Each structure stands twice: as structure tokens, then as C-alpha cells.
Image (cartoon, rainbow, N blue to C red; front, side, top):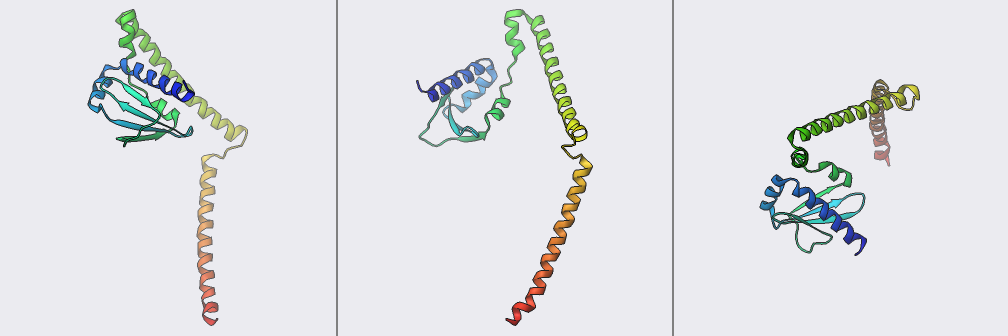
Length: 174
């Protein structure tokens, strides 16, 4: 098996495993059976063809016919899309509803904390780079710079118009 075939097989297995965890999506997939979607992965220069079946997705490296839809993006962008799987429902089969709900609450709480921590880290890093290291300008400095750029652009346009007006009599005499 070539590396590309291994990648396609692994990707197909992962997609179909995720689909099995989300019966609602599998149900909606049935209406799209027979369609082919081209997925262009930017940055890695790879196009995958997803042949939609009634209960699964077949991943191909090539497709001879026309495609019904074309998606393009980075692998990270596609990974962020994900499926909306009810993990609590699947966990409750093993642990019961109460424990699954508590685990779900803990996971949501952890996710909120991670998002808030990430936002605070970005803000702190920005302030450090602006005020402590003075590597980045603050908003007022950027706005002032942009105003100066606007004034300079207008001045250059007026100068260009004046030069063209002054060249007209010279061109007419020649």
C-alpha cells in the first residue's frame, strides 16, 4: 500500500467512525447518495474526492467524472469544522446518564476555561509586545500613521496632477 493509499484509507476510516457516532448526520447523508465532493487541501496541494453513499463516505484520490461540489481550505480549517456529536449520549451507554452528564459539564467547563485562558494569553502577549518590548505600535500610533499615509497619498496625487498640467504646454509646442 502506498503512502497516499494509506492516508486515504485512514481518512476514510476516521470519517466513517465519526459518522457512526452521529446517526442524524448519517440520516441526512442518505439524501446525498451518489454525489461526489472534491475537497482541495491548500498548503499540502492535495485533492480528495468524497463519494457519498447512503450510510458512509468513500474517500478517493482520483475521480474521472464531474464533481457535484468543490470545497477548498487548509487542513486545519477542515479539522475545525468537525461533527456535532453528542458525546454524552455515547458515554452514558457505559457509565449511565448521571456520570455522563457530569463528565459533559466538566468538559464544557474545561473548554470555556481554555478559551478564556487563550484569549487572556493573547491579550497579555500583545500588551507585552506593545508596552514592554515596544515591538508593536498601539492603536493610536497606527491610526496616526494611517492618517499621515492618507495625507501623503493625497499630496502625491495633487503633485502628479500638477506635473501633468505643466507638461501639457511643453508637449503642445513640440
